[in-house]
Length: 382
Ligand SMILES: [Mn+2]
Image 1 (cartoon, rainbow, N blue to C red):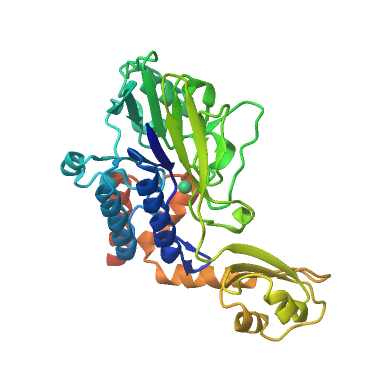
Image 2: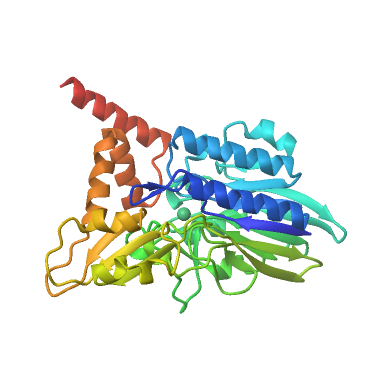
């Protein structure tokens, strides 16, 4: 059988104040096209569907359109929540949707869910593991001690009674690493302090394929059969040299697998340019690539320039970031301005949610949200 593996959609994400919704719609159209032309049986979405726990109206609409197109393409959809998603919200209507072969697995309740799809070699079990934290699964497995992410995964898989003689695919959003191999990280991911969330990829080596989300650069972990699909859109300048793709898996008999990267074309690419302002603005340089690309511009002039952003945007409308590299101190002014805009537009509750997400690496639970709301209300009354 052939199926598609994607992850880290981050629908609704803005990069330096620029909405990525048009980029997301653009790659989703390409993904639907490939699903139809390759006659795929399933689309696996390995977490981080939305960029935040409470997505905006437009983001929900874009995902609704994408899910409807997937259903109309007659593929089975297998989806888990990532650390950016609200498990409860992502589970909405999931019991109804499973009748349409759309399996939304947002919450983990102590038993690993599986969906079996058939092909000419028999059944393939897709195991759906939403993003879990040690604290969220503690107590679910009797007396088992769960102190680390490794413990959480070991107990979860151990309780699932997986028959490894059959064909099994794991869908997960945990951070898997292989000892001695430095993963390719991107600035648009969340990195909890100290890398305590890392799990040894040896624990998942017996699956025929592991469809991972979390890392935004496509990469393998300890074998061709363990893959991070990467985000379908570039979400930070640390990714500007990456080529974004979705992953096509052809699984034949036990242990017989082909993995292919299907490249995605952005509406506007993301890139960096560097040099003296006059040179960068010249027709000779600007005509070399699409002027509407998302740019990080590094200006190297020594003299003070009046309104460099205005001048740059008259030629390159989508300049996202401006840096100066000269003998004086360099300051990233545009990023600062975009951040201030963003901060001013958020409510105290949303600001705290963002802060929590950035520092802890996961969205607040319903209970934590309730506590924060109560505290803010008390504060307001006083
Ligand atoms: Mn992500």
